Amino acid sequence: MEALARDRFELADDLIYLDGNSLGPLPRGVSQRMAEVIQTEWGASLIRGWNDHSWIGMPGRVGDRIARLIGAGLGTVMVTDSTSLNVAKVLSAAVDLRPQRRVVLSDSGNFPTDLYMAQGLLGARKTGHELRIVAPEEVEAAITDAGDDLAVVMLTHVDYRTGRMHDMPSVTAATHAAGALSLWDLAHSAGAVPVDLTGDDVDFAVGCTYKYLNGGPGSPGFAYAAPQHAATMTPLLSGWMGHASPFAFDLDYQPAEGVERLRVGTPPVLALSALDAALDVWDGIEMAAVREASVGLTTAFIEGVEDRCGDHDLQLVTPRDPARRGSQVSFAHPAAYAVVQALIADDVIGDFRAPDVMRFGFTPLYLGLAEVEEAVERLRTVLDERRWDRAAFKVRAAVT
Ligand SMILES: *Cc1c(COP(=O)(O)O)cnc(C)c1O
Image 1 (cartoon, rainbow, N blue to C red):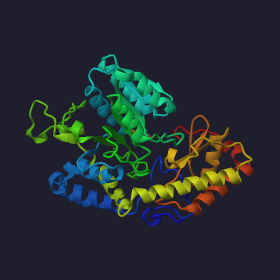
Image 2: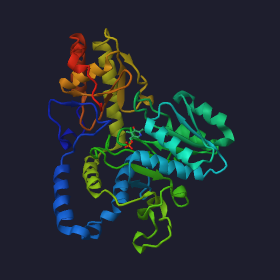
Image 3: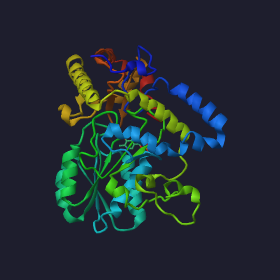
Image 4: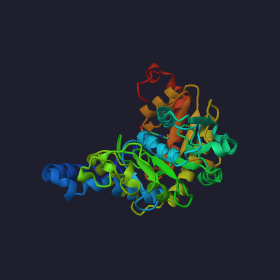
């Protein structure tokens, strides 16, 4: 099985990049497009660019391109702000739509920033809301337990550390049966696994664009609101770009129609342009094909590692059932940090998550079975030769 579109990326031939779940690689065409945007749009058009190049509409236009990948309708996704900020914005809107209820349910597999933002937001509101955090496998029982007090279920679809994937249709249905609203973080789903926000009747969603969508370091996040909520929700941050007519310069805030009201300030045109160009790699690619290839790659990696490295102290922490995992595989190892460093020195880039997890993302757009087999062999060499046991590989960098 070959990669689906490796020629659409600028990747060195001998590099095995297994960290596209953290920062996607540079797609071909982005550098050139950026040079064009900077020279002709910014440089030559100057202030006229807002109209001549429709910069002002970019959050919605780029959002529509992402919508196709997450099963959302046109005009329901805005690319704006960071994922952290978007969590606070849509959580606030969701909580307001269930005014009599006081529980926001999440799980301990959620990415910390989502929990931090919820803690900060609910604390600042001073409305007595509780953020209830349960184990991932206890979510459905906790939905029933919370009953009439459940306002919102806020979960990350694919666990950033273990790769475990929640059953989005079933959890969303249980949430609705309890009278509550769903908020899904798609950071490790968008561009990685098929998602059907419309079909699953999801209320709110957020996600990153610099992971599987390859938008570049710090590219803006996206936010989704189902049309029935978008039209009535109250924006937490009522910035001028989310105003019904920003250039009327009214003294009073009037929310824009629909999901546009999730916009806040001036859009980052250069970052959006890079993301827009990066999204070209999805032309002609269907998420069903990506998923099928991804399951093949993750299965081959798990089987390869267990077969070739089975005598080393590795523990699979990702669900073995492909239906229950996203597009990454994690193994625990007592020297996980140093093993990852030794692998990186050998051109296999994965990453480490505390306390002892080695994480490998598999992106079928630029990875095929040959790369998976080669990665397994290089891991085996690192372990057989105890290369990780060198002082240089044990020094933890500030950012890993
Ligand atoms: C990567 C990630 C984030 C990052 O949020 P930023 O605001 O972009 O830093 C948030 N949530 C999840 C689940 C993530 O995996």
